[in-house]
Image 1 (tube, one colour):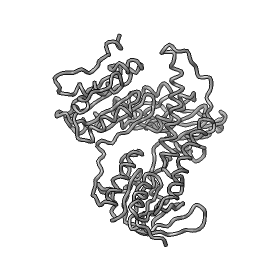
Image 2 (tube, one colour):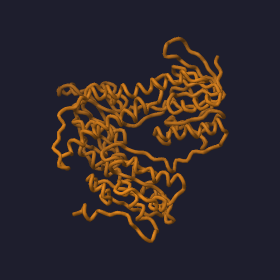
Image 3 (cartoon, helix red, strand yellow):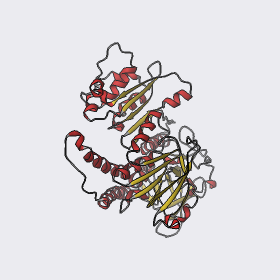
Image 4 (cartoon, helix red, strand yellow):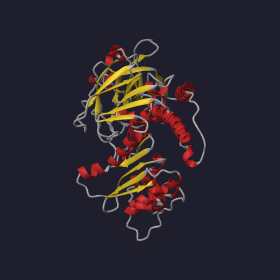
Length: 484
């Protein structure tokens, strides 16, 4: 039995804890059956955004006429696109594997890991060579998650895609039903719709991406209607092969009104070539035999931790999607930093998600940080709001992005409570707000610095300037031109 100072279960963000420990001279092991880098590199955010970039290019060409340019899309090499993206992301995963194997003090254990007790891990190697056991003085659980498959009647009798499967298809589906109105379903709906597929998008809530600020989710729902037939307030109740109805190959999804905002709607039947399930992700904790330990989970399988990310068992720490707090790669990296400080420096650092941003890569783009207006209203908290359209800034007007906006939320004392951006470069524009929030800043910390002119960040400037108590304003406002 090999003994290590630290064992990390999962080769995504958690592997950074192992390499940091190794640089301190500690002996570390990483247990991972799949490609290194986690879901983000090979099955999530990187390949999906690479696909979405191609959709953006197609949309830019189609929209060229609005800028006086005669252009057209004459074909899409779909197989070539997915092959190129696949090769790129898996090359990155392979390079990370090579780097880890060459690093001192780090052992890569290829296989599934499961607990024997609080400190002992049984590894079932993927080469079939027989189970081996290793021990760790410290153990980090970072095994991530996988697509959730909802309980839909008849699902076991049809083929279907998950969000993992949808990234590397050889051919674009002609007709596709997407079940799931969250950010994964919305992004894939935009991608496939922009590339010409006929999409039916089914979401339980009255709006897509319902966890976003209402103004944001409304904007996304309206924009996706340009790419998909959107069925909000519906849930997939049944699916069956289309040939059972003598209507050819494919599937038929029966969608019924949900309990979330479709009062009085009628049942609809949606026929397509393929079915894509984008109904969220579930933690991989069911693979770990946690019942052999004192680690506690909630009823959904997420690991329970204190605010330092340590479990109920001393020396067992957690990060990433198995926590269930913030299902983003950048959040997992942040949590990895917290675990590193606490494990390697005994820093007793606690997590703080107040300034944790996220983005949705639909058209238009979305980026958010902090609380929504609904959150503040539900909490009975006093706040002020300013919403400024993109065409307040001259570059927003030039880009004809007048349907985009920046919504800033602040307390009476100027504390930044949240910011929500819809429009081009939203994820990039958000970051000056994130930096201000992370440093405990106020609206004046965003409105005060000089902003480049003409640049889209002037929209952020203008929104926060409206909330500022400064006596004088030089924020641009080109809305009078845009309205004309």
